[in-house]
Length: 195
Image 1 (tube, rainbow, N blue to C red):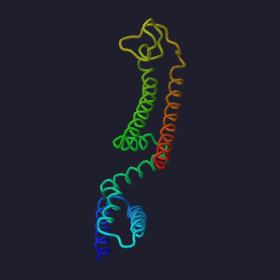
Image 2 (image 1 turned 180 degrees about the vertical axis):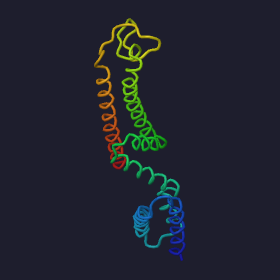
Image 3 (image 1 turned 120 degrees about the vertical axis):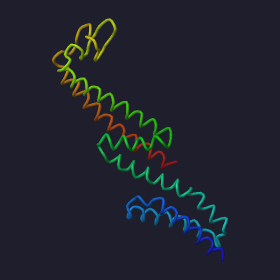
Image 4 (image 1 turned 60 degrees about the horizontal axis):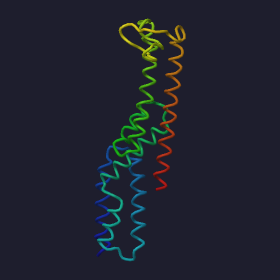
Protein backbone atom coordinates (compact mmCIF):
# COMPACT_ATOMS: atom_id res chain seq x y z
CA UNK A 1 0.00 0.00 0.00
CA UNK A 2 2.75 2.47 0.97
CA UNK A 3 4.75 1.68 -2.21
CA UNK A 4 1.74 2.64 -4.34
CA UNK A 5 1.40 5.98 -2.50
CA UNK A 6 5.13 6.60 -2.87
CA UNK A 7 5.03 5.74 -6.59
CA UNK A 8 2.16 8.18 -7.02
CA UNK A 9 4.13 10.95 -5.31
CA UNK A 10 7.24 10.22 -7.40
CA UNK A 11 5.24 10.14 -10.64
CA UNK A 12 3.48 13.40 -9.76
CA UNK A 13 6.82 15.05 -8.93
CA UNK A 14 8.45 13.95 -12.20
CA UNK A 15 5.37 14.85 -14.22
CA UNK A 16 5.49 18.37 -12.78
CA UNK A 17 9.26 18.58 -13.35
CA UNK A 18 8.84 17.44 -16.96
CA UNK A 19 6.21 20.15 -17.49
CA UNK A 20 8.57 22.80 -16.04
CA UNK A 21 11.28 21.65 -18.48
CA UNK A 22 8.99 21.47 -21.54
CA UNK A 23 10.92 24.21 -23.35
CA UNK A 24 14.12 22.11 -23.39
CA UNK A 25 14.96 19.56 -26.07
CA UNK A 26 13.27 16.20 -25.54
CA UNK A 27 16.57 14.30 -25.54
CA UNK A 28 18.22 16.46 -22.87
CA UNK A 29 15.07 16.54 -20.77
CA UNK A 30 14.50 12.76 -20.91
CA UNK A 31 18.13 11.96 -20.10
CA UNK A 32 18.11 14.31 -17.11
CA UNK A 33 14.77 12.99 -15.83
CA UNK A 34 15.95 9.39 -16.23
CA UNK A 35 19.12 10.08 -14.19
CA UNK A 36 17.23 11.96 -11.49
CA UNK A 37 14.54 9.26 -11.29
CA UNK A 38 17.25 6.59 -10.88
CA UNK A 39 18.74 8.64 -8.04
CA UNK A 40 15.36 8.94 -6.28
CA UNK A 41 14.56 5.24 -6.69
CA UNK A 42 18.02 4.33 -5.44
CA UNK A 43 17.45 6.42 -2.31
CA UNK A 44 14.04 4.82 -1.76
CA UNK A 45 15.42 1.29 -2.21
CA UNK A 46 17.68 1.83 0.76
CA UNK A 47 14.56 1.62 2.90
CA UNK A 48 12.83 -1.80 3.10
CA UNK A 49 9.29 -0.43 2.92
CA UNK A 50 9.33 3.32 2.16
CA UNK A 51 6.65 5.28 3.94
CA UNK A 52 4.81 8.26 2.58
CA UNK A 53 6.89 10.58 4.81
CA UNK A 54 10.19 9.05 3.66
CA UNK A 55 9.15 9.43 0.04
CA UNK A 56 8.25 13.08 0.58
CA UNK A 57 11.53 13.65 2.43
CA UNK A 58 13.55 12.24 -0.49
CA UNK A 59 11.67 14.45 -2.96
CA UNK A 60 11.92 17.49 -0.69
CA UNK A 61 15.69 16.99 -0.43
CA UNK A 62 15.90 17.40 -4.20
CA UNK A 63 14.07 20.71 -4.13
CA UNK A 64 10.92 21.83 -5.87
CA UNK A 65 10.45 21.06 -9.57
CA UNK A 66 10.79 24.81 -10.26
CA UNK A 67 14.18 24.93 -8.49
CA UNK A 68 15.44 21.81 -10.27
CA UNK A 69 14.33 23.09 -13.70
CA UNK A 70 15.88 26.52 -13.08
CA UNK A 71 19.16 24.97 -11.90
CA UNK A 72 19.28 22.62 -14.90
CA UNK A 73 18.70 25.50 -17.34
CA UNK A 74 21.49 27.48 -15.67
CA UNK A 75 23.84 24.49 -15.92
CA UNK A 76 23.05 24.14 -19.63
CA UNK A 77 23.67 27.85 -20.24
CA UNK A 78 26.97 27.75 -18.32
CA UNK A 79 28.05 24.62 -20.22
CA UNK A 80 27.36 26.40 -23.50
CA UNK A 81 29.16 29.54 -22.28
CA UNK A 82 32.22 27.57 -21.11
CA UNK A 83 32.58 26.09 -24.62
CA UNK A 84 31.99 29.36 -26.48
CA UNK A 85 34.33 32.18 -27.46
CA UNK A 86 31.46 34.57 -28.16
CA UNK A 87 31.26 37.52 -25.76
CA UNK A 88 27.47 37.63 -26.20
CA UNK A 89 27.06 33.98 -25.18
CA UNK A 90 29.37 34.53 -22.21
CA UNK A 91 27.54 37.68 -21.13
CA UNK A 92 24.17 35.96 -21.41
CA UNK A 93 25.39 33.02 -19.36
CA UNK A 94 26.99 35.15 -16.68
CA UNK A 95 23.92 37.39 -16.52
CA UNK A 96 21.71 34.37 -15.80
CA UNK A 97 24.28 33.21 -13.25
CA UNK A 98 24.37 36.70 -11.68
CA UNK A 99 20.68 36.37 -10.87
CA UNK A 100 21.38 33.31 -8.71
CA UNK A 101 24.11 34.47 -6.35
CA UNK A 102 27.15 36.50 -5.44
CA UNK A 103 29.67 34.41 -7.41
CA UNK A 104 27.66 34.81 -10.60
CA UNK A 105 27.27 38.53 -9.99
CA UNK A 106 31.02 38.97 -9.49
CA UNK A 107 31.83 37.06 -12.68
CA UNK A 108 29.23 39.07 -14.60
CA UNK A 109 30.73 42.36 -13.35
CA UNK A 110 34.23 41.23 -14.40
CA UNK A 111 32.83 40.41 -17.84
CA UNK A 112 31.06 43.76 -18.15
CA UNK A 113 34.10 45.80 -17.10
CA UNK A 114 36.42 43.88 -19.42
CA UNK A 115 34.17 43.97 -22.48
CA UNK A 116 33.08 47.60 -21.99
CA UNK A 117 36.70 48.72 -21.61
CA UNK A 118 37.62 46.85 -24.80
CA UNK A 119 34.69 48.47 -26.61
CA UNK A 120 35.80 51.90 -25.41
CA UNK A 121 39.22 51.30 -26.98
CA UNK A 122 37.54 50.31 -30.27
CA UNK A 123 35.28 53.37 -30.13
CA UNK A 124 38.26 55.67 -29.58
CA UNK A 125 40.10 54.10 -32.52
CA UNK A 126 37.05 54.66 -34.73
CA UNK A 127 36.55 58.25 -33.56
CA UNK A 128 40.21 59.33 -34.02
CA UNK A 129 39.99 60.01 -37.81
CA UNK A 130 36.85 62.11 -37.34
CA UNK A 131 37.98 64.00 -34.24
CA UNK A 132 41.80 64.05 -34.43
CA UNK A 133 42.17 66.93 -31.95
CA UNK A 134 39.75 65.48 -29.41
CA UNK A 135 40.65 61.79 -29.27
CA UNK A 136 44.05 60.37 -28.27
CA UNK A 137 46.24 59.69 -25.25
CA UNK A 138 46.77 63.21 -24.01
CA UNK A 139 49.02 64.07 -21.10
CA UNK A 140 48.30 67.38 -19.45
CA UNK A 141 48.23 68.96 -16.03
CA UNK A 142 44.87 67.19 -15.53
CA UNK A 143 46.43 63.74 -16.02
CA UNK A 144 45.96 61.21 -18.83
CA UNK A 145 42.84 61.52 -21.02
CA UNK A 146 41.54 59.47 -23.92
CA UNK A 147 38.90 61.76 -25.33
CA UNK A 148 37.51 65.12 -24.41
CA UNK A 149 35.17 67.62 -26.02
CA UNK A 150 35.97 70.47 -26.57
CA UNK A 151 39.56 70.22 -27.75
CA UNK A 152 42.15 68.43 -25.59
CA UNK A 153 44.98 70.36 -24.02
CA UNK A 154 48.37 68.84 -23.50
CA UNK A 155 50.73 66.58 -25.37
CA UNK A 156 49.47 63.61 -27.41
CA UNK A 157 51.56 60.56 -26.59
CA UNK A 158 50.89 58.09 -29.40
CA UNK A 159 50.01 60.42 -32.28
CA UNK A 160 49.95 58.26 -35.47
CA UNK A 161 50.26 55.05 -33.45
CA UNK A 162 47.05 55.72 -31.51
CA UNK A 163 44.70 53.77 -33.79
CA UNK A 164 46.78 50.57 -34.13
CA UNK A 165 47.67 50.52 -30.44
CA UNK A 166 44.08 51.02 -29.27
CA UNK A 167 42.83 48.36 -31.70
CA UNK A 168 45.41 45.87 -30.43
CA UNK A 169 44.68 46.83 -26.82
CA UNK A 170 40.94 46.35 -27.42
CA UNK A 171 41.54 42.96 -29.05
CA UNK A 172 43.83 41.78 -26.25
CA UNK A 173 41.39 42.97 -23.61
CA UNK A 174 38.48 41.25 -25.38
CA UNK A 175 40.40 37.97 -25.68
CA UNK A 176 41.73 38.22 -22.14
CA UNK A 177 38.26 38.87 -20.72
CA UNK A 178 36.83 35.91 -22.66
CA UNK A 179 39.57 33.60 -21.40
CA UNK A 180 39.18 34.84 -17.82
CA UNK A 181 35.39 34.42 -17.85
CA UNK A 182 35.65 30.88 -19.23
CA UNK A 183 38.21 30.05 -16.53
CA UNK A 184 36.01 31.52 -13.78
CA UNK A 185 32.95 29.60 -14.98
CA UNK A 186 34.86 26.33 -14.95
CA UNK A 187 36.60 27.09 -11.65
CA UNK A 188 33.44 28.05 -9.73
CA UNK A 189 31.50 25.11 -11.18
CA UNK A 190 34.21 22.66 -10.07
CA UNK A 191 34.23 24.30 -6.63
CA UNK A 192 30.44 23.98 -6.43
CA UNK A 193 30.57 20.30 -7.42
CA UNK A 194 33.07 19.59 -4.62
CA UNK A 195 30.74 21.20 -2.08
